[in-house]
Length: 95
Image (cartoon, rainbow, N blue to C red; front, side, top):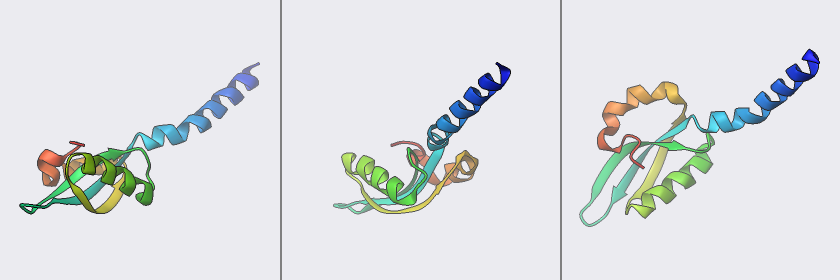
Protein backbone atom coordinates (compact mmCIF):
# COMPACT_ATOMS: atom_id res chain seq x y z
CA UNK A 1 0.00 0.00 0.00
CA UNK A 2 2.82 2.40 0.86
CA UNK A 3 4.44 1.61 -2.46
CA UNK A 4 1.26 2.44 -4.37
CA UNK A 5 0.86 5.75 -2.53
CA UNK A 6 4.50 6.63 -3.14
CA UNK A 7 4.08 5.78 -6.82
CA UNK A 8 0.98 7.95 -7.09
CA UNK A 9 2.68 10.83 -5.31
CA UNK A 10 5.68 10.60 -7.64
CA UNK A 11 3.43 10.49 -10.69
CA UNK A 12 1.52 13.56 -9.49
CA UNK A 13 4.75 15.43 -8.85
CA UNK A 14 6.09 14.63 -12.31
CA UNK A 15 2.79 15.62 -13.93
CA UNK A 16 2.58 18.94 -12.07
CA UNK A 17 6.26 19.88 -12.47
CA UNK A 18 5.86 21.63 -15.85
CA UNK A 19 2.94 23.70 -14.56
CA UNK A 20 4.88 24.72 -11.47
CA UNK A 21 7.96 25.54 -13.52
CA UNK A 22 5.93 27.56 -16.02
CA UNK A 23 4.53 29.69 -13.22
CA UNK A 24 8.09 30.63 -12.33
CA UNK A 25 9.21 31.99 -15.72
CA UNK A 26 9.94 35.63 -16.40
CA UNK A 27 11.13 37.55 -19.45
CA UNK A 28 12.99 40.82 -19.65
CA UNK A 29 12.35 42.80 -22.80
CA UNK A 30 12.67 46.13 -24.60
CA UNK A 31 9.65 47.90 -26.08
CA UNK A 32 8.74 51.15 -27.83
CA UNK A 33 5.87 53.48 -28.61
CA UNK A 34 5.79 55.89 -31.55
CA UNK A 35 4.60 59.52 -31.76
CA UNK A 36 6.43 60.56 -29.66
CA UNK A 37 9.10 57.88 -29.49
CA UNK A 38 9.23 56.26 -26.04
CA UNK A 39 11.35 53.27 -25.06
CA UNK A 40 11.25 51.07 -22.00
CA UNK A 41 12.88 48.03 -20.46
CA UNK A 42 10.61 45.74 -18.47
CA UNK A 43 10.18 42.41 -16.73
CA UNK A 44 7.07 40.29 -17.18
CA UNK A 45 5.93 36.92 -15.82
CA UNK A 46 5.29 34.52 -18.71
CA UNK A 47 3.64 31.13 -18.95
CA UNK A 48 6.43 29.48 -20.97
CA UNK A 49 10.17 29.33 -20.41
CA UNK A 50 10.68 28.94 -24.17
CA UNK A 51 12.09 32.22 -25.57
CA UNK A 52 9.98 31.95 -28.75
CA UNK A 53 6.70 31.34 -26.92
CA UNK A 54 7.54 33.98 -24.32
CA UNK A 55 8.15 36.55 -27.09
CA UNK A 56 4.69 35.95 -28.52
CA UNK A 57 3.07 36.32 -25.12
CA UNK A 58 5.05 39.47 -24.27
CA UNK A 59 4.26 41.05 -27.67
CA UNK A 60 0.54 40.38 -27.25
CA UNK A 61 0.33 41.91 -23.79
CA UNK A 62 2.38 44.93 -24.80
CA UNK A 63 0.33 45.49 -27.96
CA UNK A 64 -2.88 45.69 -25.97
CA UNK A 65 -1.29 48.54 -23.99
CA UNK A 66 -0.06 50.39 -27.09
CA UNK A 67 3.58 49.20 -27.00
CA UNK A 68 5.59 47.33 -29.64
CA UNK A 69 8.01 44.61 -28.55
CA UNK A 70 11.54 45.24 -29.80
CA UNK A 71 13.08 42.08 -28.36
CA UNK A 72 13.01 39.62 -25.50
CA UNK A 73 16.43 39.80 -23.90
CA UNK A 74 16.17 36.64 -21.83
CA UNK A 75 13.83 34.21 -20.10
CA UNK A 76 14.73 33.29 -16.52
CA UNK A 77 13.44 31.95 -13.22
CA UNK A 78 12.68 33.72 -9.95
CA UNK A 79 16.38 33.82 -9.06
CA UNK A 80 16.90 36.64 -11.59
CA UNK A 81 14.10 38.95 -10.47
CA UNK A 82 15.84 41.05 -7.83
CA UNK A 83 18.80 42.02 -9.99
CA UNK A 84 16.45 43.33 -12.71
CA UNK A 85 13.97 45.15 -10.47
CA UNK A 86 15.79 48.49 -10.28
CA UNK A 87 16.43 48.67 -14.03
CA UNK A 88 12.82 47.87 -14.93
CA UNK A 89 11.41 50.55 -12.61
CA UNK A 90 7.69 51.12 -13.28
CA UNK A 91 7.70 48.31 -15.87
CA UNK A 92 8.72 45.65 -13.34
CA UNK A 93 5.92 43.02 -13.51
CA UNK A 94 3.52 45.70 -14.82
CA UNK A 95 2.03 43.70 -17.70
